[in-house]
Length: 145
Image: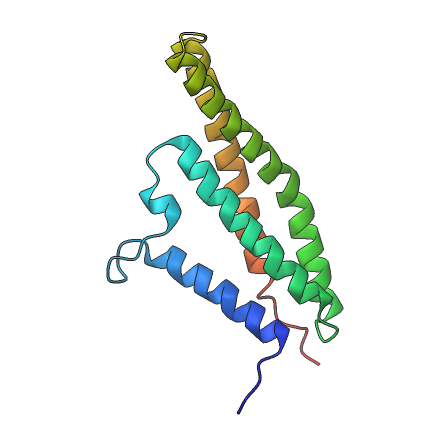
């Protein structure tokens, strides 16, 4: 029986995430959370969830003593770029949700919501490539010797 190392398990997890993301509508009805999200905050939460999974897998990979230093450095660089943007993405999403609740209570305006949604959409656009770069950093191959 073959036993997979943590590095291999993490690689397989990232591969599964990428496969599901690539499938969108073509894999027997499987869709990524981003593909079925209907509101900007749903898109943001789906993207943030993807970041959380990627960050957890990245931690496992970097803790594996067999992981090459070049991969560790690539992951660290990508995570350093993605983390603050992902945190701001989450905060912006919470802001939109709060304003929606305030509107329902008559305590806010549609104009304020429009500004918050525009801000959230900017964070989504900024976060997506950084999170994709974090995922890609985990599949980097060691330098050939």
